[in-house]
Length: 504
Image (cartoon, rainbow, N blue to C red; front, side, top):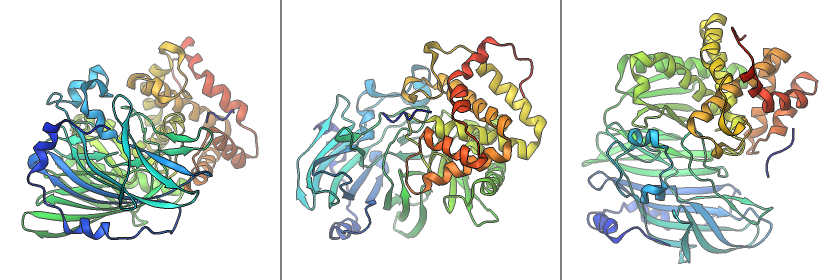
């Protein structure tokens, strides 16, 4: 199979809103005093944050130790500034049918109020780019392999909404919330930065170490990526520490309405469900822990020491991050128990495929999402038997196989070309069918062995491609699967012209 790899600050009124009552943590100064370290080539991000509940904002100081990955001298680095999506209603990525669900309180401007940018403690030039200003270019002068420390001082203004950043009744959500450098493309001599998508992962970043200090009002619980440690309360505030190593993104969610239910797997992985739905939350914790244990048998040790599953105001299903999953409150309703179970199984699988071991998240999204979807069905089969598996397959896959998708999109297509419905049909359901056809042809043990090999290829920070998947399947079986996989990946849509009474 062929490889497919092919300044402005916010309105003064918003700044004035926050200008008064900001208390800097003494820890900000402590972090600022550290010298740039020449250690590993992996970037390191230090964050000191305070949640200002009355202003619906965070005060953030960020220090990013960055290594020039290119073979030439860098005069600037481009960073994601995804929070600026909320500056203009025209920039919102959500489809019209979902706007009222996501922005339940209506639209109100939010985004990043950038106060200061420095490089190695010295003021430096910077500028927002693009009509929606979701890219920040910062000047520097870095020789190949050299390091510098970028420092950012800013407010993150949040909307009341159910988006990937925002404040709701249940939780405050933070993802892609700090300045994250794009991936440097040596072929084009520039940085790759992806636009946000509502239906799959989109943030394309190199692995990084995060160390964060977050001050919250007393009474909040915190879920998210990495090791989380609750500090002692001081007055009406509690300081939390978060350490996440070797991850491509970090997400945090905090709320006051959760109860925390915890399970420990036989291998020592902690599964936490943070929810106000007592019975459903307990069942969710059991199911997720069982899924982790089964995936460990198939693919090796779970890639993170814990998995947080947080009930969230995010309304469209689930959002997955390293060691963390946000799940819509609607899925915690008793009537949606089956849908919640399948979401959690897929989320556990994608902690392997997509988080710890990753493909390019937009151009090759199917290499994580379709695999995670099929593994969810395998976990259903393990838990409830072959009959339950086949009933689910015929209920979910057959309608997807027999629908015509405008534009003839294939599961290998760039995910930005799909809307959410098309993505579910083509990439998730039809992609699962492609994996099922592989299973039928090579046997389940060989398929699982091939997927384990594929996963292991990506653990050491290598971005996986379709070539890697073929190589992994070949190694597991001693046969060549390129022609078979290519045929199914490009032609699974032909099922639309065939009557299907029962699919096995």
